[in-house]
Length: 112
Picture 1 (cartoon, rainbow, N blue to C red):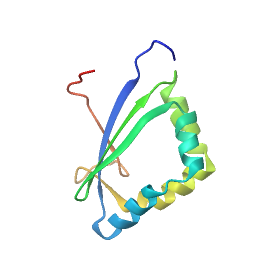
Picture 2 (picture 1 turned 135 degrees about the vertical axis):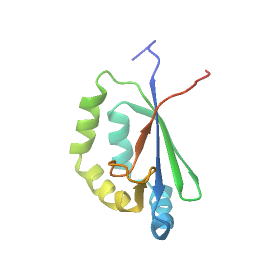
Picture 3 (picture 1 turned 45 degrees about the vertical axis):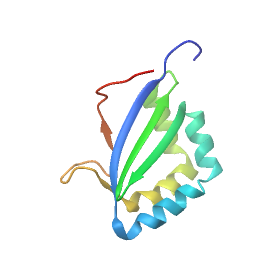
């Protein structure tokens, strides 16, 4: 999408302390098919930060239909296997949340 600003997303979760190193090891060697699917689904500048057992994700969406692209990503076999490995390492950021892991954040401020 030339000339259109990306939509920014932030999300937070916690790592299960006993699986923290497994999660970080997986992300030191992300599967190429997972990265290709993320890119094909309009996601750019995807970064995960870690502080103790808290993880914060940031990405920009440059596609035209976020929900459709998210559904396409969820249908990808390699991504499903990746999530099966990374999902058990994560907890929602907020105790008692209905989220399976990542909780989306509301943008409060931005500076280009």
